[in-house]
Amino acid sequence: MKKKFETRAIHAGCEPEPFTGAVMTPIFQTSTFVQESPGQKKGYVYARSHNPTRTALETNIASLEEGKYGLAFPSGMSAISTVIRILGTGDHVICCDDVYSGTFRMFEKILSKQNLEFDFVDLSRPEFIEKHIKDNTKIIWIETPSNPLLKITDIETITNIAKSNNILTVADNTFATPFFQNPLDLGVDIVVHSTTKYLNGHSDMIGGAVVTDDRKIYDQVHFFQNATGAAPGPFDCFLALRGIKTLAVRMERHADNAMKIAQFLEKHSNVTNVIYPGLESHPQHELAKRQMSGFGGMITFFIKGGLESARSFLERVEIFSLAESLGGVESLIEHPAIMTHSSLPQEVREKLGISDELIRISVGIENVDDLIDDLDKALL
Ligand SMILES: *Cc1c(COP(=O)(O)O)cnc(C)c1O
Image (cartoon, rainbow, N blue to C red; front, side, top):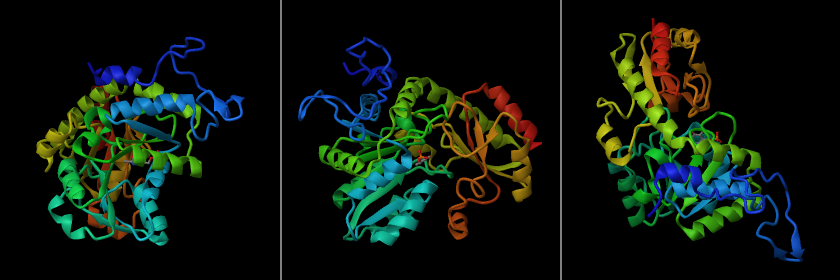
């Protein structure tokens, strides 16, 4: 019988180390591995290509994502920039319009100037996708829930459209995590992650991952990874692996706390709108329920009173740290227009609805009463 998620989170890829019996995967802090005779290797050669600590992490994440092959990267951006190399000159990508701002920056500021074409489209409205498909469209890039507006994309509908047009799909599953959503099961070809966020979960490393069921894609992405040097260090792999062991219990608590906080914010008179996929008021709540097994720990809301009100609220919170990033055990809060999404041109922010009143929180796993009390005091 296939082991359940919680069991695989702890054990997949993590056999006791054969030489010493160490139960926890050691940090193989070495750049090279001895050969018995020229070309006769014991399994590992040089740590840019492979390292045992990294292999354990790769096997583990692949298992959680229900995929055959996993690759670990030194950052989420490095995973994304390596995957996108499967494109050739002149290829076209359809990308969701509120994609992670670093992904937007790479596509728009670097790759658009290197003979790749990008269209940023609202993928939460799949009925409009077909008109964006061109002869040279090779990838549809999905991120759901999106950031910061938590729009939900119907993964299965998109992958069906993509398949019938011979287009690959990539899903950035950082926000939902494999605990709440498995894009490969819904037909996606490649899953990417920033392991910096929920997978590691402790805000103490930067990392990324790629998972696929397709051997050809895996070989190609691993070739690019090795050839361009996008190799994560063993210590960061160890930290991610250690963090993942508690992913299931953390995600349950993140989601429970987030639901209670979203309900509290929805009733608060200084809050004009709350976006959380778990709320019935979310326009795609039904889709979220169908596609995800939980709604995650991210909430976005609009505060009354414009920029000044947002600024003073953000200065008043005490338990929530005013910081970029998300997915750690500690609660974070931020102002997307000034912080995480400032690299987007103003007209793009306006079109997406990232206004001065918009606040994003990454709900941690502290006691929820303390978190609500902190917000309540700061909202006045
Ligand atoms: C953070 C993030 C990334 C980039 O990952 P890094 O580890 O910061 O390079 C990509 N996608 C999403 C959804 C993210 O939240």
